[in-house]
Length: 263
Image (cartoon, rainbow, N blue to C red; front, side, top):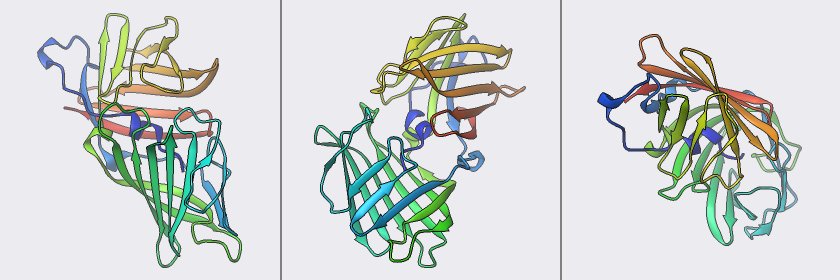
């Protein structure tokens, strides 16, 4: 149920001058939602007898569904989680850091129980406006008898809407230095085949290293506490108009892909 990392990461920036671009990577890129392939791995939830459990969340969540803030540990973004049952098909999660809301999710199951809509709002990594998006998921398995309809396994199918600041980012390759930056305050500049560089603005203290795979492909590796957590490949199309991005989430054992167009 946690946010899709790249939807919160790719946020709007002012586009640099195209005339000054020295590399096909340089410029602002905007995701085409129709090309997004979400992780195939399932999310598993249980809401029953007043308790909410998300075993596939990282870290796992086990709290009372009473609408109150409950202290949790293991996530650098938030320190409390609140689960509130809004009606017999809708549940809302609210995550806070030091009393401030940093993430919300509203999950609404369709009347036939076969699909659900996830509505997200996230400001965990942002120093600007929050990022919002809506996701459609399909049921894979039902929860036990007597549990809330949100219970069971779900697979994300597609993102149907996103705020503009969740769709664009700016990249730049200047000599051997590759950089990423967004308006939420997340940025890095790392040397190709060089040492790890800090992912500025990231509360998880992520370190980044980059290497060039070929003329049109750069690979980014993210680490936390010395452990690789994700690997991302940026590949420029032959005509330089589109950017193919593939992300391998090593923590969850899942992957996603999307295509972005140069703006």
